[in-house]
Length: 208
Image (cartoon, rainbow, N blue to C red; front, top):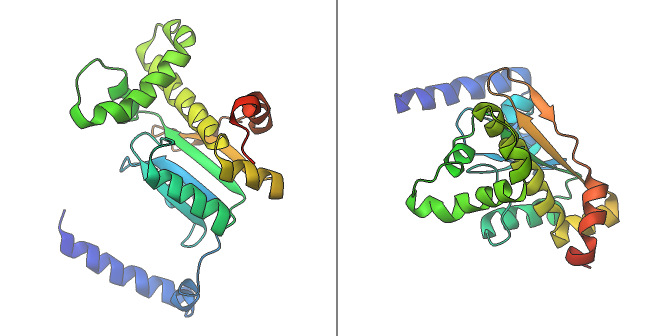
């Protein structure tokens, strides 16, 4: 990659934006009001705004390896709190993707050094759902299903947070789980049962 081309592309992008809207950057500088927080994977093939057809200012984005929502990760927790409590987003999406390297690495027994504690959270997802996953004989289908189950469990982790619970009570914020199919380009809605999950975990995870 020639990095000089990046700056040329930037200049071209500026001209294209100004050609269609002369106030584009003036408006951009006035602040943001996104409706949606997107928590996705850092994979270079999965670009949040592009796959949704969204523009600057429409989506607040956080990305990490395998789209994880881990309670002791101050990065993701800070993003969630800021997006939910300050930006007042009404939707939070966890978006995984098929062919996820992080999920695949978690399915292997290799020692991956500093990645071990991060990937252990995905291995915990496998442990929770091992009966279903072990019944799948096709390794690729098992891999795809773990991607989906990982999204589901990260949505559960989101619903455990005080910020999300409070926003649900105050303005009916919704949590969604999606998967991006890198082979077809399709976004798949896993139709996470937000209310059902919330009801199921409230005995232990209820936070005022």
